[in-house]
Image (cartoon, rainbow over all chains, first blue to last red):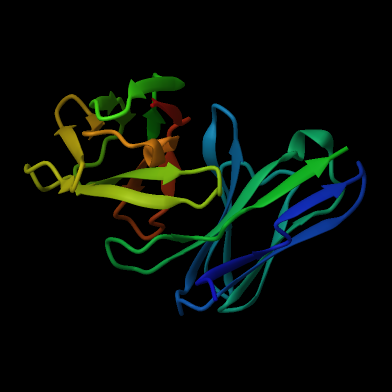
Length: 112
Length: 115
């Protein structure tokens, strides 16, 4: 099994729908992150969490919310999806050391 | 806030040749980490090489090496003996040593390898 698992792998949804992207990890890391990838912009940070009770907004949090259900689970929600939220979304974990960033395989979300 | 710039949206190289991908960054910190990630069509983010800012020696991993110029805030990736499997998106990334340890990415460079 992958260290960081994202579901679904691909998703098409309609404008205005609520959608949740899920992430689970077996690394035992406290720190988890959600990034969004757009062409030419690289990956940008949406939200991050240092533990279950510590959740923080990133660079582009508007229109998104997150939930840290457990150390191993970190979900990203779009309350009312819009077309410009069409992107590739990555979940990642890290340890407090100098290295150790682990990415999931991404969720490609299309909002029509 | 830190920024990372990759000025080459696309690059191409002939198989077996050498190519250099450019990356510059802006920061006021003295200690940090720099990374190059590879993203093949499978979407997986694969760590290629990393560099600690306090180390003067350039990092090397097999055919991949970096030219780290701290004063110039430049961090280029050299791929030697390019292979077809090197074709991918490459992202340069900066990581602070503060409590957050968030990664800041450049916009990416798409590398094409010609047989």
